[in-house]
Image (cartoon, rainbow, N blue to C red):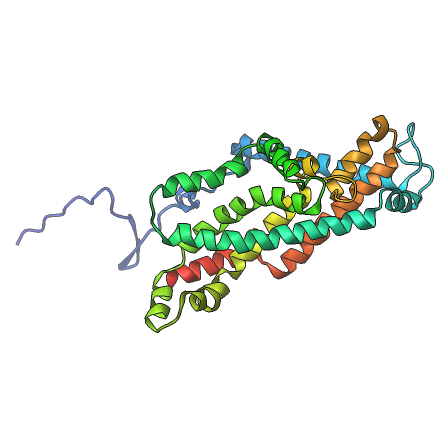
Length: 316
């Protein structure tokens, strides 16, 4: 029988003879094939360096402003040098006594805690209704809740303040609380509604089939699941309320000003005649108050816990 030798295929690996046996030659390494998809050298992406440069510039300017305020609040008058010649804590004691900061901080805390509590009590049930119920004009109602959040506060703050003064509530703590509820309740609703929508309704249905009332379902079953979302919404409302200037300024007065409004009044009193280090001391107290609030809040709320709870509820 005649032996016919066939030509080797082009794609077949070449072989080298080693004695009577042949061994395949390993293919040449291909760096392009071994590269992970999406992994590119930084040198090939100038936009990456531009982004990092922008972030670095922002942090430098931010830290520079904070450091200058801190130095100004502890230093004596200085103009021609980089640092003041002397440092003193007298500006803090003077600001504390002149502007009654003890009472101002107490009012700020009362307003912030009241707004957070009322916003949660009103916003969470409303969020549940929007997430679980279908009713006419639901999209229109949802859009109405968006308005106080997306439009500038001054646009609805002036007519709102007029209503407060007409009812005799102007320059009172109650007025400050009520006007801050207007943007805070929609903020809780917008935050909590998607969170509730991702919880499997079968959990509630099973509890109802077992004879549980709606109040027990909401408190004992949904409550523990909603705790991360409620705490996250409460933190955001707290920070927003403490920093809210426009609405508070329109209805507050002597004895009912929050800290941010007191700083503004100190800057503009008598044409800005207050010493600059005095205002810087108040600004540093305000910044420290906000940082302490965030640190305490993040001690009890882990941002990743919110996503984990949502995923767990969705899997159930």
